[in-house]
Image 1 (cartoon, one colour):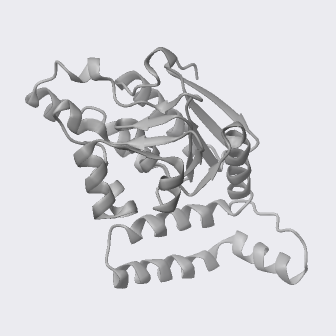
Image 2 (cartoon, helix red, strand yellow):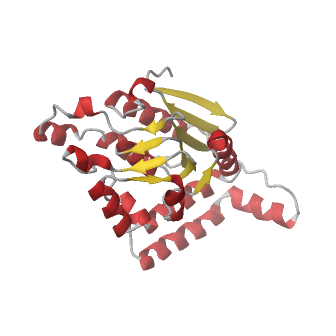
Length: 258
């Protein structure tokens, strides 16, 4: 498909979506988010793609949501249109793993977009923030919810109430970023991680994603029960038979995603 606000490519079994509004520092608007959700959903249906990367530019992953699009909206319009919310919900429902490769600014909606991905690999130049309060509003796409679950109440309150930015080192130390790498190695490292995921059993990877996400949404007892049932279900897959046979035979497994 041809897109105007993102660039897409597939490398091996990895789909890469690059936000492409350089004149606006990749600010998120409706056309961009529609295209991004469309691309990720298409890869989710494509058996040849087993992992995805969302990234931006060296200067900005995404500097926020498009203020020009939001500013004239009324309460009634925001409520009825659910501005940006439908697209974020679509991205959250993608079953295959999504890595956010973040360099430069990931602010407001940009930080929330990184959060809706499954984990973040950050360049040393990355800056995260929820500065909505400086505009007289608050986060509306997960910044008060996903962020709090990941970094805890105190740091989330600090970011959302003061609007301060968090650098890459702090983001890694508090669990927001999974790892930090030199800026010039960001995509190499993201592709290595995505390639390693893509080489695994696709059903197993999707079940892992589902189980880890469930941990944020339920009690420990319910989460353990859910994990156990998925673990048992994996023994109905051909990939489980192949993986354990390959281990016993001291060879590399040939997973087929079945």
